Image 1 (cartoon, helix red, strand yellow):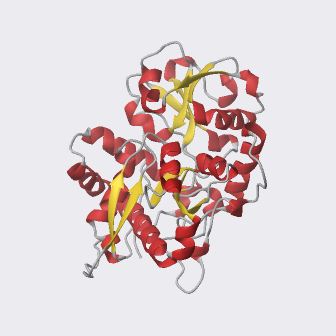
Image 2 (cartoon, rainbow, N blue to C red):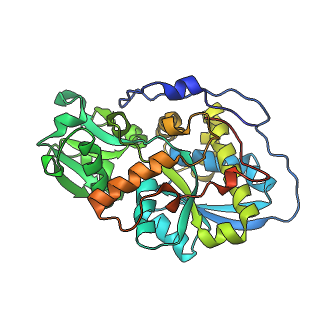
Length: 346
């Protein structure tokens, strides 16, 4: 078994600011190297949730360590312009596997897309609001009357996050931005008071020193990023999906143990990236591996309560049709049965 994130760290309340990125420790209980079994590999494709960044390092590190090869897989790694593109690509068969924000997945399932989350390697919500340090804003409730920069697809999430602090959706003024220019729009404009996004972008926002206000501390915790597949792939090739997910989860654990090696694996494939920024982004992801709902459960296992909270919020603020039971949006089949996934414990 690979590295395990300490439970006491995961239970701690986290206050994050740009330039103060917390690294979750990990202790080894096995080898980081793949076994190198050899043999013919099956080619599969994976699309990430955004443009390539340090947050993708665990996937590249898993590949370098031979974890995919251990499962008989050869993976092609692609990036995207956002979770929406990733979901569309997986649903259309363009990619076999993807990583997307759980909220986007919930909305896609509500539209009838036959996809499902098979694991949540980032279970604690990393989303929230960046506010300038000199703004005097110290809580989400103080965003009342402020202009908040947001992507179009994330607007319902903003409403759910501020509702957790007792604010009506009309309390903030939303300014919609393209996902690919969100960070630059925030750092380059004094006309907005905050930006709603993932904490992983902290390393890219240093031009406008900011404090991060996590929505999870307000009580709204959608699963962060989920591994998704089409339902028919899970039913027709469960062993392949099992192997792919195991390799990914092992990669996340290995990256927590040795972030520099993970970044080196990423930069070997993407030398155009800024090394310091990539490391900052990776370190920013590490405190978000497990939510309180996943504690004492296998790492990556979907937490039903978190999915139900998300679905109920999307029904209220995005008109999600149909049931809000969590299992409509995820499958934990890989974590049960004769060979349950158990890479680590939250």
